[in-house]
Image (cartoon, rainbow, N blue to C red; front, side):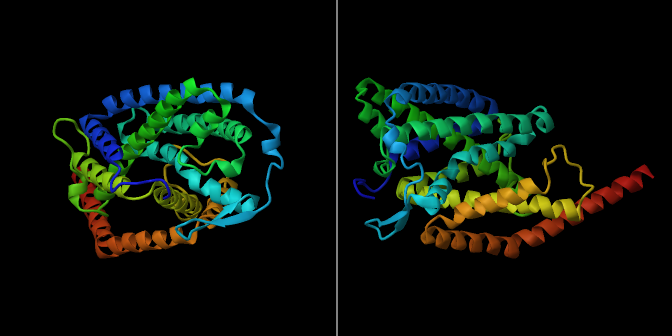
Length: 342
């Protein structure tokens, strides 16, 4: 990336190490820190919206959907600007901002009333954050023309365009808070996904180890923190953003289609939360996510295929047999339980 120098992003590695240690310490402590970060972040976002609204130039929103154009980066990557394809590509790249809502569900085992609290919390926060995202986008593209915002810090550029120099350090604080909050939620979710997969036999028992004192999945938290720190420290943020968005969109497509399959193959399965307006919600969800995937660069598809092949190899070489053994053990325990009661 032009203008970026050095071998490793040391601040990213340090922040990830601190957050990983915090998550090992406990969920309650992590939630308290995250709440403080979110309050700071939302306050700054609202400040940007309210102040920036006064500096919007309507000419920057005309036409609202600019004509489609393309450009080639110094790395040889083709990007689309404007038009429907450009909008889909941009939406696909920023889709990683919605990962946190999906990751929250992985902490359901640690919630007091997950059947009630999880769906409500996810839906309410999703609506609020979407409104804020749209408002920030409208303000930012109104202050600075959209084709000038392809920079590492677009909000800082927008603030500089207003001449409000006193707002610059506050924006930087908000950016750090926003990224830290996202990292904390994702570092909370991924170890618990590994934990659940291990309990189902899809991964070795090591992945479901619980700390004897803190009662957290400490081994998977450490493993996740190390891998994420190395990747974040060594790879460009643009590449990581596209790869993260691609993986998230694929997961959403599979979940949406899985709802349709389960409703047909296992209609009597207990469902504390049922998807409304079946089958249109999962069908539209899968189609919209797939459309955003099509707007991402081909190199991101190549990386997705490699990661998908690696995951399938782990599944067929270990996970499938491990899951079968776990199901056999569960059936045996149930049979013994029925025999004891009889």
